[in-house]
Image (tube, rainbow, N blue to C red; front, side):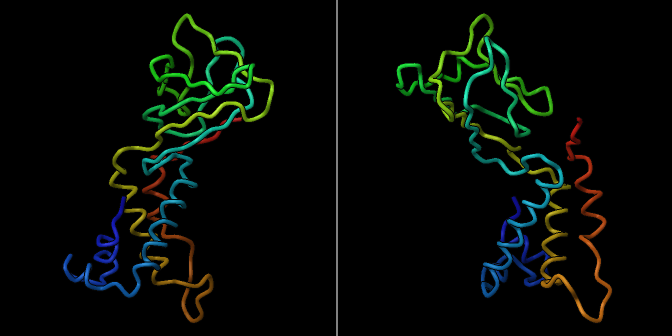
Length: 186
């Protein structure tokens, strides 16, 4: 993830890392731009670009041993899976009892071979899956796209700029994010 220091160097607010840490007047604005740029990139690509914990709540398990399609890509680990059994007690499935298939664009989670999903209560939101999603390291071209967006938004802080020609986010951002874009089908 882009650090505040790296963003300040990119914005030419400092020449050295020491100057970047000393200049703090606009840290909150710049950090907000970094966060917004990552959100923009994730929305554009439909991929999780910064590693973090995600949660999915379901109303029921699929029938038998059918897989659950996780709505994030990539998923690196299943942290926990809790469910409410038919008697109303909270239960937990160990990660060893689950099979995570990361080959498809959206990973699939299923019980181990030869087993089935357990029975749950007949209530909504009875299953909670917690997973780690996102690459451990952001790809370098995504980092560059984020820096380009931060620079563009830092210089053009309003949606309309009077007296100059304003355009969408720099064309380079689209080209840098294109290889990471997940295309929807159907």
